[in-house]
Image 1 (tube, one colour):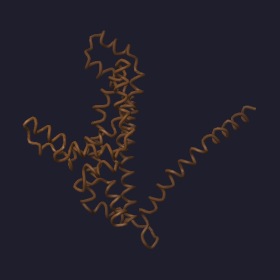
Image 2 (cartoon, helix red, strand yellow):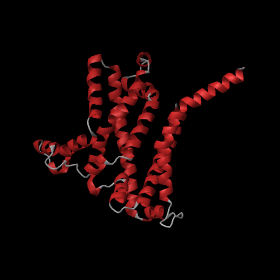
Image 3 (cartoon, rainbow, N blue to C red):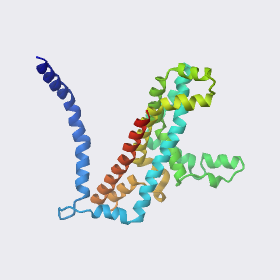
Image 4 (cartoon, rainbow, N blue to C red):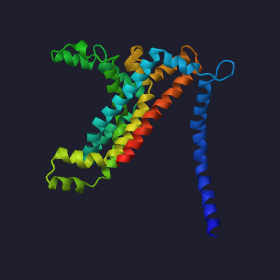
Amino acid sequence: MSDRITAAARRESLALLAPGIAVLLLAFLLPVAVILVTSVRDPAGGLTAAHFAKFFVDDYYLRIAWRTLRLALAITAVTVIFGLPLAWIMVRAGPRLRFAIMLMVILPLMTSVVIRTFGWLVVLGNGGLLARLGEFLGLDGRALVLMHTETGVVIAMAQVLLPFMVLTLLGVLRAIPRDLEEAARTMGAGFWATMRLVVLPLAVPGIVSGSLIVFALSISSFITPSLVGGVRLPVLASSIYQSIGGSFDWPFAAAQSVLLLAATLAVIIPYTRLARGRT
């Protein structure tokens, strides 16, 4: 009797999971499989590694790959540095301040990323708000023009992706009892010691989850790096677009896509295991 109940429960579970599995297969695994096949196919229909070799033998593409990874790591670090205090303030603040901060965090998500990026072009470009502010303060305005610089890309991308970090950390920090902080303060720990020894270790799951989301989004981002960085600072996403729309080299674009996916997994999987071992 128990075996029949167990078998029926398994069939019911599979029936409930079937739609999700089908969507996953059609929307993710099937396109990835097509890209993998395209990246190793030659014009005659055979298999070749020439498309991957083209990437590794050319310093131009290696520099693009290193720039993409460096920018993604920098953007992730910036969102953690600003997102953790902001999320903690939201948890500990009163209802009105919490609502105001939540509104400022969520509102950018309701605006197109293209519009937000063009806003940064106005702020960071020649004659922009930042340059004029520097001139008003007696500084060299040209030195504050951050268009077509990696710093400008990091600033713009961090602003675009900061809500994902804050909202992820918010749920984790809400679960931390305030009594733990009060107990640490009672035992003689100062504010910064409490943050470092109590809040930060307990917030690690949120930091890991938010970092993975931000890193995955930033390393594959196309619009903001292309507009702010321009042709002087290409990233892998723009290189893939150029291979498709410029030279119509679909196999090489597929090879770059596979390498981008592999680089993302190479960072995410060890990072997740390391964080899991410390929690």
